Length: 294
Ligand code: CP
Ligand code: NVA
Image (cartoon, rainbow, N blue to C red; front, side, top):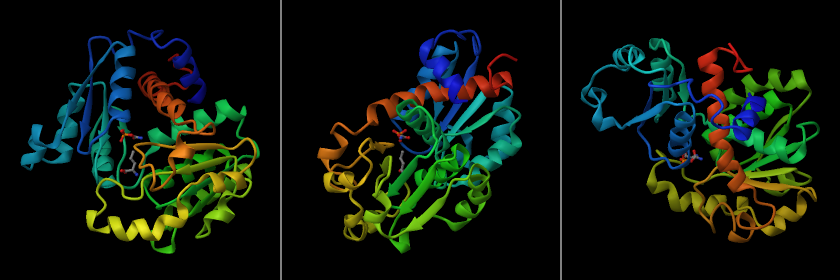
C-alpha cells in the first residue's frame, strides 16, 4: 500500500479514469480539514467526485437506519468514506454496504492517519528496521491506530500516558501477536522521559479529542502537562529523531511551538502524505489489488 502511495505521489493523475463519472460518498459527522480536503483531492485525481454529507443532510438524522443508508448508497457510489463518533456505526455501515468503506476517524481508530504516518517514517529512515516510536499524551484513536500500524510495520512502540488516560488494553492485546511476528515490541508507561529516550519518532496528539467532554479540558491540562513535548525532551531522543503530530495542534499544550515549528518537525510532509496514501487506499480497494493493476 505504501509503494502504491509513492506511485500516486510521483504521478497523481496516472489513474484519472478509475472513478470517472462516479461519486464517492463522504459522510462526516465531525469537523475535518486534512481528511476531508485530502480525500476530495485524491478522489478528483482518480477522476471522481467526492460528495460530502453531514448528519442533518441525510434521513439518518431523522432515524433512518445505518443499514438502510448503506444499502441505498451502495447503489449510487463507488466507495464510502466515513468519519463518525462510535466505531460501531462505521462497522455497521460496512457490514450492510456492498462497496468499500473507509474509516476516516472514529472515537476508537484513525487508520488513514497512521498509513500516512508510516509512509512519512519510511521515507525519512529508508525502512522500519530497528525504529522506536514514542507516543506521548492521551491514549486516544490516533494512539490506537499507531499501535496497530507499528505492529504491522515492525516498529517498536512505546505509549506514555497517565494511567487514567491509558489506551484500551484490547487494542494492545490484539496487536501483540502481530508485533511478535516481526519481532517488535509494544510498551505502555506513565513515564514520558523514559519513553522518549532513544526514540526515532516522537509523536503527540491533542489532549482533548472531538467528542471528549469539554468539562475535562482543564483537568487534562494539568494532568498531561508532564507529557508536553519540549525541546529538552527531544534532546533525549535519538540524534536523527523526528517530531510528528497528526494535527490540528495546540501549541503550548501537547507540544511547544519551538518543537512543532522546529527543524525536527515533519508535520507538513505528514499532512501531504494523507492525500497520497488515500489515493493508494482507493486504488487498492477499487481494483482489488495492491499493485493497482486488477
Ligand atoms: N489529522 C486529521 O485527521 O485532521 P483533520 O481532523 O483535519 O481531518
Ligand atoms: N484525536 C483527535 C484526532 C484529530 C485528527 C480527535 O479525535 O479529535
